[in-house]
Image (cartoon, rainbow, N blue to C red; front, side, top):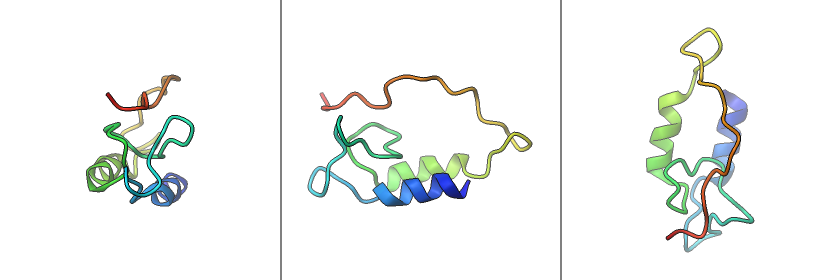
Length: 72
């Protein structure tokens, strides 16, 4: 929803050159865990945008580590 979009937009554009996504400061929306928040991540975000408990519900959340930084 809009709250998720706002969180994603805050970190969009972060990269290894500009405020990198790191273990102590991860990016909201680094879906492919490549250390940045870019167009590839935006495509992933858009695929699930608009899902709700009534419209294609999201699967149950699994609590765990989002991305394992630093990258290999």
